[in-house]
Image (cartoon, rainbow over all chains, first blue to last red; front, side, top):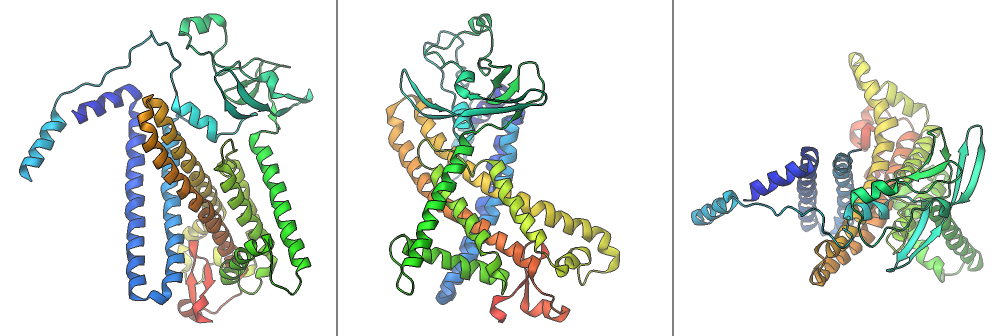
Length: 85
Length: 376
């Protein structure tokens, strides 16, 4: 049921937009995994050495923003596809 | 577990069909969320505050057009404003009979707005130098920053030698944070030359990110031209303050065998001139615009479902995303400033011997070398 619905929508709006939608979902998955790993290791590091928590937090935020930047590159590409630019 | 999977399989392969939207017979105007969202995050020749059922409260901004051979034309965008869309959607045949499509407005002086862009009726070249919504927002936030920071400076003059008071005490920790954590750590001993630019960039991005979240605001830092300009300014400052060491690192990266240089030089050049500014641009633009799109999408959910029952969920999520955007506002400003400082630091640092590279140097982005703060 879900698969046939999905294919109907894909047929109606066009395969390019369908691809862009799946792409954007995959990007979110990738970014979530990456930032989740960084967050997890940062938590561990803070647990091992609470005095360094300030530095670790700063570094974690920087890396999270860099990963997010990459994810947003891909989101911009998906948006360009779906608005046919 | 097996039964659950079997049930899931049956559900997914069950043949069902989506209800196709029926053509014609529609009495109300169809809500187009894509159009509404693009209108809110894009630039425009008019500043649309809000609309009631019969009125659109808009400020019409001046259009300044330059056509080679015909000079400048300056007039209010009211002359090119499209008629407000009717309450009932016209059928395609009626629209074609009336002439003109929905995205083109009336023309004036041989110019018209096609899908928001200023074009000439006969297709000749026109340069659009108008004061658009984003330009006014830019000037407004520049005035705001001038007011805020001149009062901070005046506070320092008045309270010479004493504890800071008032607005000065709000900005002092932030300015000291940028000076100590960002500038001194990344640029090193010559940081004072670059403090004005770093402070300006930080507060410009932060203020404009915050202003963009207010109702009826212009999405300034979500405009790729604005963020590209900031990135180009960073690039220019980096290039002009680069010393011989920096160029030596790009053209003759130490420790690289000569045979690899034909590959390394283009890679380093692309890294320095293309990847760094483009990544700064797109990171800021996409973060801010994506945040706005998410908030607007949650609000449009109410209009898509046409039911007030969606409102509590939609507002709760929208509120959460709005608060997250407050964090993103200052985080993106911090990241832009930090990366700018790191690029400048990579450009101005002095030469160190090769042995020291491994022990007290750290490599920063794109292979630039940053002094390790822990080693000093």
